[in-house]
Image (cartoon, rainbow, N blue to C red; front, side, top):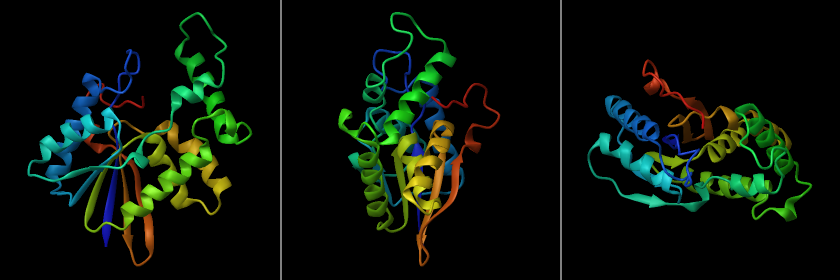
Length: 220
């Protein structure tokens, strides 16, 4: 039996000019995860990561605490969906001023509903269906690896991997993804096992490594 540990990247720099960079908190979350994995004696046989900078930086910080030497591979199918393009396709109701957190969240959810609804697929560089197909393909390829596979990715792909494994139909999986995606914790770990029963979700969004550490629990 093998296992896949899907790691969401540490907190990115949401309010900076370049989102695809870990914040100071993100670096520390990733180091805390590495220390927790080391304490559990987890030694990955394979390390995969998406092609984004925040994936690479999370891997660097985490693996730096694990010690040893392991080859990392980049699989772009583990990349996050283009949330910037998604938002651009759904004009903001607060043009010309900085939104409150509540206003931004309402806009983000409305834009997500539009993207996942499937009625405007031609307006996106990557439709929701195309996104879920590539993540599903990435999960299938990863499940063919032996031993412990550590994957550094993002909340969207992790939420789809979990939803796809739990739901019986694509429609149910899409609804479940909408529930799971917003609650993915930065540096959280989702565990999937592979064996005679196929690929099975065991735990979702584990983040005990952040317990008791002030200001380390973040979702964005």
